[in-house]
Length: 507
Image (cartoon, rainbow, N blue to C red):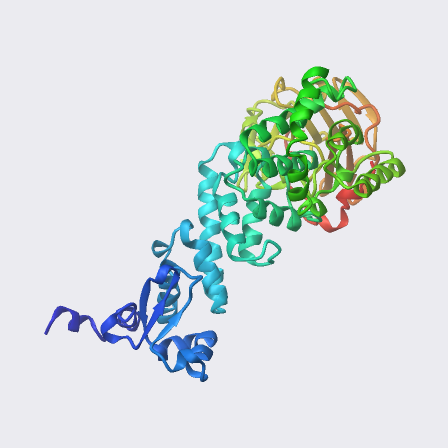
């Protein structure tokens, strides 16, 4: 008996897999993109897909000839479709990120929902692995933008499906200014902005930088010189913030240089304006500082006057802009205690989400530990701290990036701001009354407003005003707690975002 004959009958999956693209046993040719051919079996294809059943057995042209054409599906994607139809198998070895969008689109066309889910999970795993290898500033790397650009070529930029949602989730965690203009197409940018405009998901790019990136992306379709001119006329947000302290938003270049840049900009202004009009409905000008709107954006004459007036009227009524970043801060993802940045008598449990003071330790004074995530962007950041076991006052708050002595009570130090279970707030050894005393089981939500550099606390569901004497916090902060034995404190994201109205919070 031949070796191949021995194998048959042992595994239905292997026997059916043997039929895939086997010309000897096929009765139909499937002609894919670029006229590539893959061979199949009518009965199996029709039995496994309603779409193919209608095409092959319902009197259509394809039911009377021995070939069927799918000019928008390439050979590799069709091979994945056939393997799944024949064997119900999906091996990650048979797919790569390069063809994942093609495969997902094909699975969507043939209404194979389970296969779509498997491909989405593959992409999710691949992006996570890439994320772990990337530098912190490249959280989405270039993979997610490239995938979204491919996806909008196959699907509408306004499409609402699990693949696009997943990719947008990853891009949202990446500052737009770190994404190369050739990696994220203009259509993909439209898709990203349209689906995050009213989001309650994490987003990290300020709205001014969203506008700036959009204008430069439009200029990218004109010339490198156009990009260079826009970069001069619309400086990055960090440079603007520096000049904001001096109330001078035009300090980046002298008047003569600015006039020269503006004169060159006029050559391609109308072209950029036309392209920009596609995505303007998905840029929220109310989130951009009014001085930036007046000094930097309005002179470019890229925006319809009614759109600018709406933003001015809103800010005139509210006396301020909305938070500078759409959505919610990225900060709450994977929030844990830092196993290195802690006092010598503190121990971590439950995947670093719980900290305890070692009851057998020699040190009986308060010690500190900070979280693993730094806070350094505009917006409102909120996290939850549960005092599972109190001690001689447990303390909750924030500290700076450097300068903290982890073995000395945080409230005595100039680089920390903490609320204690005594009900008092302490900073630089100066205390003030804030709330009533609280004990074990108390849930505290910290509300850190990095736009206004202020902090407030909710204690057991009751939100209190910002601490009046802490009105100019630093630009980079970490969550921190201070405790001694038998203290036990749990850290995590706010469990229920629904009761928090981020965009309209006034505190």
